[in-house]
Image (cartoon, rainbow, N blue to C red; front, side):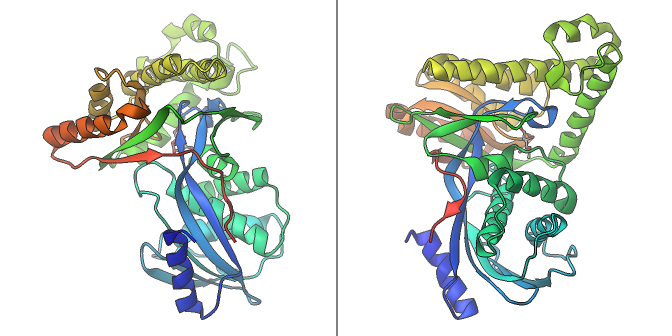
Length: 386
Ligand code: GAF
């Protein structure tokens, strides 16, 4: 058993005096390209990684849930019949999932659960989606509910939107639940069709560089961006009734109505229309095994996020700029919602250690912050350990 799993199981035994009936792992995610496109019904290209949340869980016969958060060393017991927002914010993810399963009409009972993991918090690697994904998956298993994975994905998104109160898209929970070994997944967020693309990791490595900052405007700006995109859609709908999201907007249609947009809304929409097309082009690169071209698309995404969508920050821009004169770096960009968190870097494997050294030294000198980097490996999505 891996050390993390062992610690979670040991804590379970201490707390509950027995072995858990099930152990589940649920990964965090990366996204190679396609940022902020999920809530615009575009494409994303995420993958599940080797940073994960582990759950040790058993069913109960009553309607209580006794939950223990290993990393926080916090415990709460709550009833399925009274899912309230307590001071323990981490319980919202569990309660939100239960709430959604109950709303779907399934007959649930309570559970004893210990969970914890090694997904860095606040780094934009979706520890919250991993928590929802893993817990919903575990409940589905222990109560043999027979819910398919895509229904779990949608249910986790609704839990986050409605109970946790974060208006996120579908990408993060999708990646956690649907991830596959050595593959990235192109998800069409409109139809929810998806396709796996092999992503070979023999010669190249994906490295996350964590700025260590999370600027507070992140959440409010996320909602502002959503509203700006919706404004663009409303404007264009007047000319083309078939436009339901920015996914339906061609560059030509957008350009034809430029004068009717305010400057900011136009920039946001321009980024979005370009980014949706960029994911499609980047997937063609993968089919041709052309990682050089793929990397250029990553840089183009960062440019758009920095200058047009304006969700980057000085720390992220600095880290991306530091890669530009390193020939072993094929592509780099900020990843996730923005305003902090990580950059994702596609690097030749033989140069990985030199890359880490260069980046750490430069970041420390510029911001006085120790740069934490993660070499990530693409792994299978949420699954049973035992
Ligand atoms: C956050 C959200 F949760 C995702 O749904 C997605 O919009 C992402 O930001 C930006 O691509 O992770």
